[in-house]
Image (cartoon, rainbow, N blue to C red; front, side):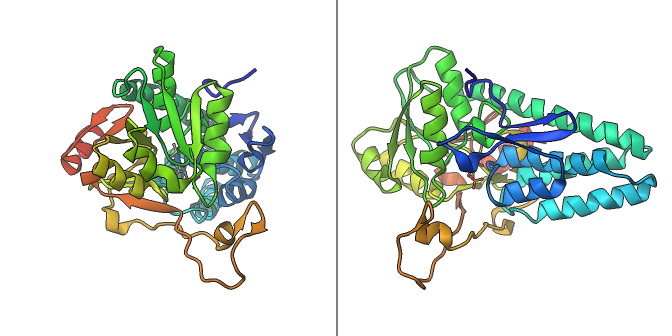
Length: 346
Ligand code: MRU
């Protein structure tokens, strides 16, 4: 049986994209196969595929689908066709910088090709390389982060920064996996992560399936668990880390960081280089606001009165003074983050 140490969430196979349908989890582990960029854009928008590294690679593959299926023979017209797919994919979700990184990388590869034929081969090879590099980066950052983890630790996470949020292995949960592979006994506390429940549906699923001890809590139990001394460290992922050292991650991360500071608990974010935004400062980032239905309903069942006003920010921003370190595949980044991020990430 496949496990999430080796399984791939998103993969390029025979000029098509194959991905796990995360909306069906934890009930059914099923795959979809897409051949058109519109299908990939829709999958990102509806969170059939989600998690910053996974959507970055999926979006790049969306453009590769456009390329390999194109009937265009004229190179400038072919690039215009790809640009139109790129613009559709860029409009799917605004916060995770990996999405834009993936699109820009594959577009640059297409533009630097000499002909349509060469570009088709080049983008297909590029997305396969991106797929492999993501797993490799996660394994490497896992090893870096595992040095922070002690035998017997209980780690609090948020959302799903696991194999399902990446091509494979995971970032925050990649650190957990690397520690487990080194023989350390670790436990993970998983907040359910309302409103989309990625903690309950996805993190609890992949950890249980891999036999890694985990305890599911409601989001509201985080402070209490810390106050009882039941959390040794916090490790979360990131959707974007800006050049001034702010960590954008799933809503609820900021309150974990504030509470961790209050209780003297180390707070780490684990992310590959593709999650860093070396151009923008924190006040230039758009935080995705999702529909009210996610809040007023739980799995389709209404739990709030009709017409109640709703705010549904999907991400929040943790300032650098609450962050102990950032784990990357290139090494560990500590403060001063604004100085050290550009030194390590380029
Ligand atoms: O809305 P989602 O499920 O795409 O949000 C995912 C997160 O916030 C993850 O923590 C983040 O992408 C890091 S994934 C390795």
